[in-house]
Image (cartoon, rainbow, N blue to C red; front, side, top):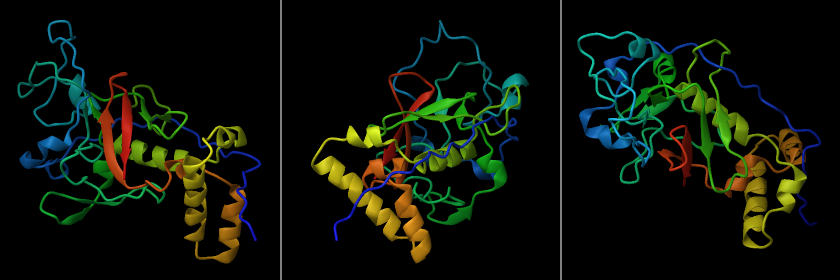
Length: 249
């Protein structure tokens, strides 16, 4: 019996909002001095003479409150956009977390010592970038549309947290694609790889009834990644400081 790819009759839309300002960072949640290569600024930097003066703390990632509250320990030197070390792509080292983006967001992380630690709620609520952003976009060559990340709560002055990035990526990749998007896939290897990812993903569901339901939901965005679902981090792009590229294996 031949296999048939199906599509969902309706697409589930997950609401996006904004999050309350993140709590102050703790030293235990920051990378060691040996992990500075995990921070991945975008390739382009503005001329310091033309950049607005921004107050930064001496820690790698500024909280919303710290940026608005000068103190003698702060440097008055503008710095380029940085990404949180849990989200940063480093091509020459292992990612800070182990996460298959087809599964729920991670709750633990591996540091340079090789020990696994639980991610505290405070760490997950830290700003995703420094300086903090009210929104950001995630792009990938296999996805037709960028993933838009907003804070979880619609409050004025809210910023994107690490957890906002994780949860938004997971929810967006679980959305069904439109049949026209599938029809636009190149015939041959690409479409075959997408189909294979769809059947492999559904085949991992142990319960027969749940597996049948998942098959009926059809191709999802996660299947467009053609099996490359291991999160390696986000890297800066030439487009803008709020556009980051998703790296997968």
